[in-house]
Image (spheres, one colour):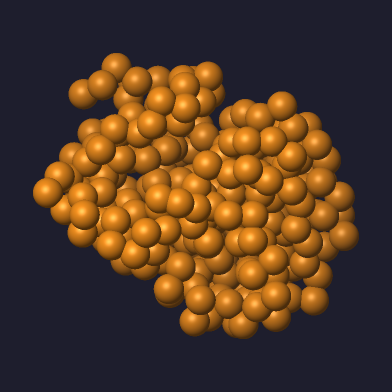
Length: 251
């Protein structure tokens, strides 16, 4: 196990509030709830909301635990927990980062959530991730090391991550995109999408394409004019928090 896998394991993050508003946060593939930085505390204190950041299966353990997991494993885990929160009468706002944004968008097409806050969604992939046969080309190996710039960013964030990526991760992201492509028109809740102008994985056009296909009346795209992928540790995080606050008040 790489020593970076031991950085700040948070487990599920649950911050209580007397409000019926709840932010249900979903982190990315190979990340953890810690990837959201101070965002959960901001939502809890500034917006007086309950916060529930779920640890996806196979995370905060060993990367080998991710290898057998399929998209349906993550979706069914989140679906079960989301149903339980909705049964409590909670007004749910889904927040998803990267692969978690894909899962949030999928869930929002099936359940009566009150809003969507998506960050760095890899809906339209950049080169080389968009190569149609990339996973087959790499099929001789189960994992590959993340590139140096991604590792450096992770280390600066000082939150749990896997420094290597299962080859299956590329397949899961593409599978998720094919799945949500079919149901985007069923998303009717307010939606805001944050995206780096020069994202490490997803094209900027991801935002326009999603917003053009959802049925939401209230929708907005916000661009972060720098290179990166995780907005919660970027120099623009306070700007992002302010935009979240303003959009939440509009809802």
